[in-house]
Image (cartoon, rainbow, N blue to C red):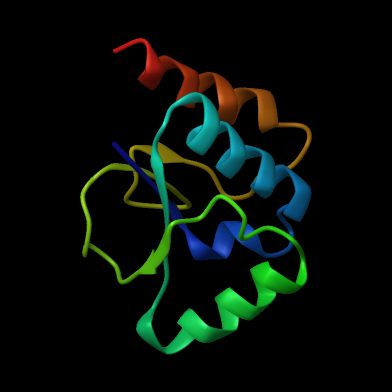
Length: 103
């Protein structure tokens, strides 16, 4: 199973540590491949941003929009629509991902 997260959820106003928690949960507890979905022109920028902030550990790859199939998390056109990942909604995101594990 792929969990595809739109790249803009890794940058402020999202919390980098909460973003990393979502990728850790998806990878370790769901055995999912975590993919970051980014415009082609931004791949290197997002890679550097995530590496510099210690948030690339559980990401398998950075892909272009609609290049892969899976459960999408993003601010629009996603299975789970959310505009940021912060401590206030982290349990909601993890809960939604947890329901995937029970399918």
